[in-house]
Image 1 (cartoon, rainbow, N blue to C red):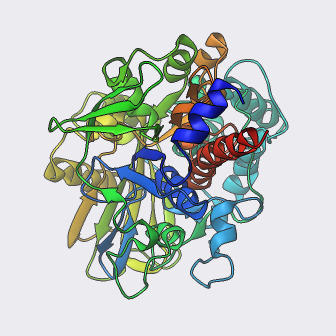
Image 2 (cartoon, helix red, strand yellow):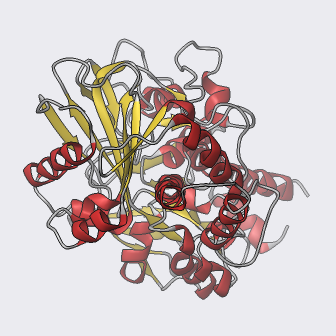
Image 3 (cartoon, rainbow, N blue to C red):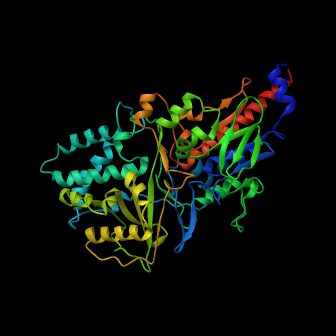
Length: 484
């Protein structure tokens, strides 16, 4: 038997190995539940927040719940989230919502259905499918394709076409997580799950999926199921010392020192960007640092406005804003400049008294610095500017602040042109740090480390399982080695 095989086989096994998982988002919960299922006994999740879930955050609001973070299950085929819930009667299909969107200009003119039906498909079809990879940015690709097709149309109103295309690009940014499409790489390797892209949790929320992973008791909202006794909240990590070949040492912000044989780090890419230089001792390898620098965690925030009765006409389930150039220039010189990056608003399924809105990028980060009163003032100004009818003052208002929170620093990740230049990607972020015997010491999971499903809950879940399986395979290998 080799020295490596003897050391690991004699000293540690699935029952005695101490595994610490940083973060209780879907990646952390998936890793922990999988490890316990595989026979690991000493598994602990350290969570910086006072709740589990990470960027899944379902809260009670209005008639039932809202999701402040992840909201939809994106697709059905090859989607591990959908596979888990498809036969449980807890999700609903959203269906074709694009055909119901109203496009309203800043002079209160509603764009005709005829014009929308001629222009919107050109924008949709300008987006490349998964099989298409290209040099340069997604913004350049989509812009060129859109205008090539628009130029073939007779007598098209190019001003409205420009306004609608700008709205479309902001909408796509809310999917990508980017400030703009010109920073998004054309070589993202993303694989779309076929089926409804907006499978909805209705009155249950995305936390339902986490509870299924944990096998939580239905009648006990705070029950963590198989993770009872394995999760420590309010445990923010200040340093992870992975030096040498012995145990890893973790220092919490309160000064507490913990030790582990393996650490699975699932913190967001935003936290890694902010803290990797101080968080890891010794410094991370250059390849991993390049991935942290090259990939990006964008900012997408939400607004929830609760009214005493359904606020919108029945034929206005959603609406997007088209800015006339003169109004846009005036807006940019005003205190409400940040509302330019609001993509639109829609009624929330199973919550007819709510309006939900979305804001992207730099202006989303600025919005987080304002008071709730200032934000609501800006939104109500926007409604008065665009809508041909009056909306009442909301009964209650809520906005998210994903960038401001030091435990997240953003919403979800995407591949950038800088990542192309650095020749890096999720594969470098994923790569475990091992000792000379191949033992995984410091592992990385989370949506940003997914090669094909980044930015999604199903991608994050897959990475948690990936890292659990990596440890399980390692200890299985040692067992085979010890029998030689």
